[in-house]
Image (tube, rainbow, N blue to C red; front, side, top):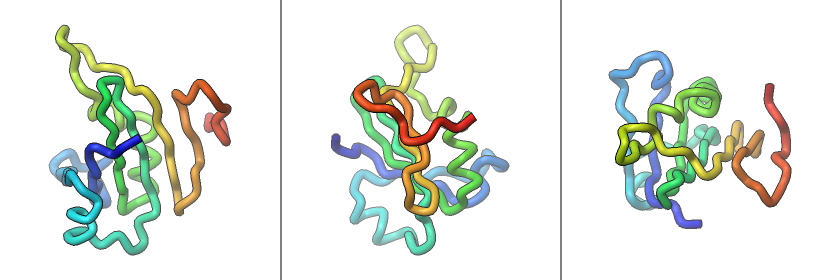
Length: 113
């Protein structure tokens, strides 16, 4: 696995669509600009088109929202205009892996209902 994009998600992205995500191609590039202290909330999203993205959220509520429905707006569009599926996803809150999906070789650690 290699991360193709690191994406910073400022607090409030779930409530205000005018707050932009910020994309970086390298971890060093992102850490030089963004303050990662106190942001242990992440979602890893592996697209079905061989692109892996790591989303870093300032707020846990935003990470949960992205995990449940927000990711759908970030899926790539196929040649027919439909969103491509994701390959796999993992959610971390407070630095701990909470859930994953799309990993056929192992059970997710927790199933969230």
